Image 1: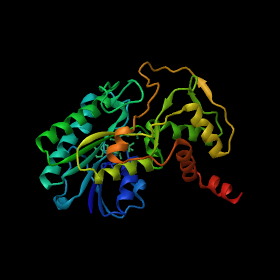
Image 2 (image 1 turned 30 degrees about the vertical axis):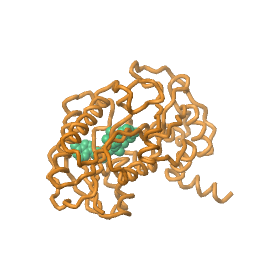
Image 3 (image 1 turned 90 degrees about the vertical axis):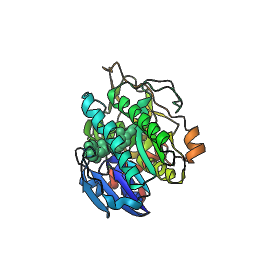
Length: 310
Ligand SMILES: NC(=O)c1ccc[n+]([C@@H]2O[C@H](COP(=O)([O-])OP(=O)(O)OC[C@H]3O[C@@H](n4cnc5c(N)ncnc54)[C@H](O)[C@@H]3O)[C@@H](O)[C@H]2O)c1
């Protein structure tokens, strides 16, 4: 099989490219504006450094089985709408045209729970989009572009995956846009009390990157087009995350609470997973405890070695 992965040096793209290479030939594309080559240290396929807004996509991908589109501006605090839309929306439309030109009939693209904004929970794909920032708006526009493309090209399977709060190996480059789980881990690894907004009971549907890769693989067997949530359906509070991190890191650091300065803050996210489960057959394998344990053992293998010797 042959695949193209965009945003392949990023958190999700790199984990996906590394898994896909077990199933065939992979072309990894990234402009390295945010992601890092070292995320692809174990990657054996071809790497193409290019900007999706201008890339000369390779014609040799004619027998491409699927394009996985992860490249995007992922920092939700970016306020330059023109930039956000040119990278996230216009470049995606360009990619769809390319897919059509080479006859690649499966395109899987990264959408986001940001399309729901501060909507009710659990969040269902049929809910009216209510993005709270231009990043979320750009994802809604991508979904609209995908729908319009499928309407004109009914033989194509174009699938949008609305990722919830992804965490896992390969996110160090994201700095302040990295997952809260990673940020809290760093504070605690430095021996500091983890800092969270009062009173830590806000919750997120945290999804481990290995499950996100699993959801992408499920799309290969799905013949239709659609939009699917990729979460666990079981959210965790920030207090709970700290509890689990303490256990996994063998620490006992109590949270330090402070006032939340953001009016647009999403208090909670939780995916309704019924459609993903029924149609994509996607069932996450990592709850927040198992995911954090696995992640900590990768971030700090010494903890894992000490534990296994006991
Ligand atoms: N991580 C999450 O929690 C989350 C949640 C919802 C949706 N998503 C979406 O999933 C996708 C992947 O996110 P991620 O967490 O891996 O982010 P990331 O920032 O780690 O990866 C994005 C990659 O895209 C690349 N990129 C950016 N602009 C580019 C351009 N113009 N041309 C080529 N490459 C470009 C970056 O260098 C980076 O490697 C994104 O579309 C993001 O919006 C992520």
